[in-house]
Length: 112
Image (cartoon, rainbow, N blue to C red; front, side):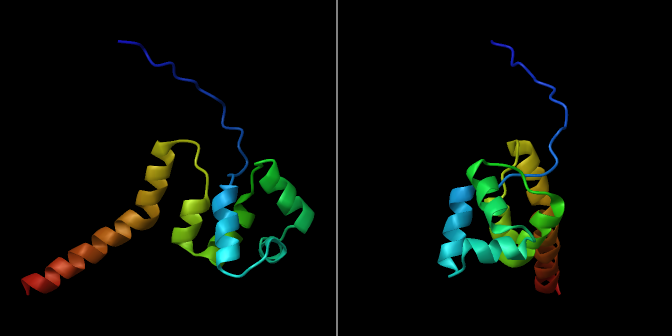
């Protein structure tokens, strides 16, 4: 059995990237434009397009604006996470606890 090599990279990320194909698909599906989304994220249009093209990172304030614009579920699909573990953890923190509480409430109603 081969040993897996684990890399301990320093945490130098100052933001997260976006999956540009999914983001563009969402933008055009909802009859919006890239300049409109850039303005909502408080970014110059050219910087927004260049960041998408170069697969750059967006800071927390920009991502927060994007989540408000898209909604949490759609934004979760568009965000790029560095690992599956991180993606699962964020999913659980954002959506998992709410669904568990909702499920428990439904079960309690059925019991009564």
